[in-house]
Image 1 (cartoon, rainbow, N blue to C red):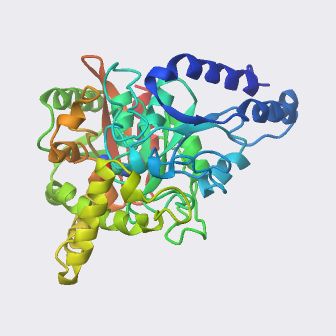
Image 2 (image 1 turned 60 degrees about the vertical axis):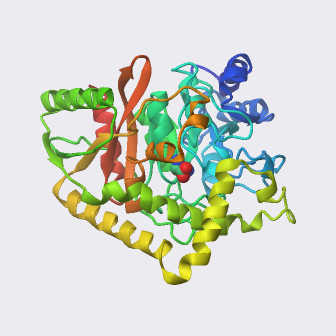
Image 3 (image 1 turned 45 degrees about the vertical axis):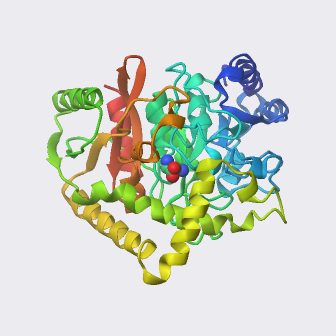
Length: 439
Ligand code: GLN
């Protein structure tokens, strides 16, 4: 029998949200039916007699680019300001089937374009741990909601780091699955060849549970694949590769190295530095792909079927991508940008495949810098902002899985480390995360 009813739990979360979220801005829209849904579930559970799904008792926040029937799915954009979803995304169907409760839709960078949360048309989300600072992005509200204790876990999307980056800044776990492991049906895409839906949680057990529920082949997303159940095993002695990286804040490197030393002593793993040469091209490779795919994807926001015409209603970063994407598309007959970028993407993918033959997992920091003060992003050069994803983009380009786990704080600001495994390697990756969590 459960110690606390789901109803009470949902009421507790909603009260906390009412008290604290005015400042944090993690949610854009709450599920008015959440309490009733919880009551109904408790009734069905009958104090332990009824057979309930795996997510019974779990309360989940959803990024505002994932369709949840009847809820506002506006991508934190004026373009889709009052748009209500008419259907459930595949991941939402799965969550509902397992009796999870959706508590609300979270804030984000507009159309998932950004890495700080400052590009939301409805105001930046504040970091609940490092006050006055960004949460990271683009899944800013989903990360903040979990870190602030507004729900148990949440869904985000990760195209170039949008789950791992805010997980790192908020001190929680953020999983970016292998490309294709989770159906993108019902996700409003940023860049369809890179997007993946993934999860945030405060502990690895919750992350593993939600990942296992949402994953799997779905015929409505043709690139989705079945990789089998996410099995957690004792990892034993393994070989970890430490990826050499440049341009990372010295304090972050120090903390990262200290952690690696601790693993070496306590876990007796083998560690070796490893070079992945082409990852320094990751950011330059990523943006042409995103611009072009985003430009093409946004042509449906022409103001005729739903919402407003995107060019007339979106913010600066989204407009930059649309105009940039249109330019590149026009110049593409020479194969100058998009095709080149695809070639480098392939190089990076192959390099990771080779390196991952020699190691069980790869480790590196998640974000090269600490979360800046809200508003500072507006003064930064676009190259500086884009550089915040330099360490997360490589896994998206390679199509492999990666998780950010918390490793401590610097001046009160959380810092994360990535564990990267090969295609379909979530079982091993999350087993490693769990083992580290237990140290
Ligand atoms: N910050 C990156 C971008 O702006 C990543 C976004 C994402 O992963 N959705 O494109």
